[in-house]
Length: 426
Image (cartoon, rainbow, N blue to C red; front, top):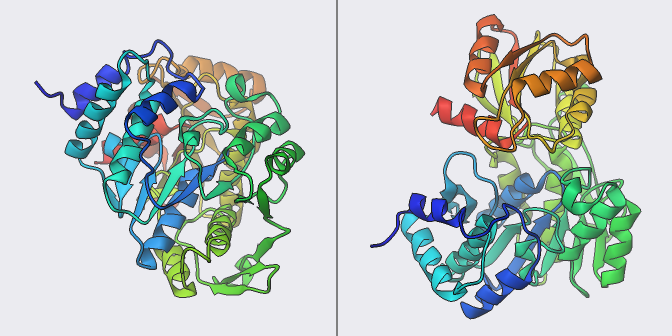
């Protein structure tokens, strides 16, 4: 009797004793047993600490506006597992995923696979059967040993490097950068989207023989001045290319860097892909990504963001600083145990008027309880106004009760926070 998608996902959690087990040997062996399906004639991988999902979506939007059929693989999902695989802008069906999982199970024999490895193989398999032109693959964790890295990409994008997943990747930006650089290939372009990348990343890319296209050096951009009200901005390349571009639909200031890296990627692939400026402009003005400063309420303004580390919190702080002063900010915040809560608190500081601490320990074994979050606040910022709640729903309900029409409620800190908020809204 065939399993449903939900049954397959539950089964996959039992096929490896480790939730995360980096390494390519197991997943590559199964992939080869399946015939080593290449997902598309052209493959772009997107790695980095933050900004990956937005960059994938921007690339997808630009390519689709130019008439190409795309496949995208991202993780984790927010509401439905099917979100992880998109074919030409549409989430993969249950039937397509189940059929792929059946093929993976037949191919793997006794070789254990993690939940993520099953998902990666399924994405490659579904895409290879869908007649797409370009596959855009988000790297899940790290780079060198991430399952996605079994594919030799035509171009690699590395968005940003910051401290996250230190238990697997290292305790400083240089070490993490070296791991992320593992998705680059000799003689092929690696786009570095960060203006101040760690030297460890650049050294590793040079050592791999990659052709480096670096923000601030190979390409750059100017952003519109808030005071003028002009939303237009420009992108430049050292070869003389200049693009006049419209307002971004994505709200945070950091999205200019993500958009610029996406443009630089397509510029580097211009010998294989024709993406006219009009297609780029169309995507910039329309692409939105769930869970990235996603507005889900108006009075009070209610936003959901998956930001979960200090770098992401700094991006939220920049957005708060750039917007007009419109009242108090109430944060519904939850976090996983391996995250730098003190760094997030320091990044946002007194931009948040009141914190509603949501326990995530009911959602995942890795989730922090509200009491554990409160302890972190007591150590990092004891004077912060804060309250504790057992879950996201009750914390959000309390924030809504005190927020006025001119205030802002920001739900953030983890994909689990965003998922709970979006599921409740639905």
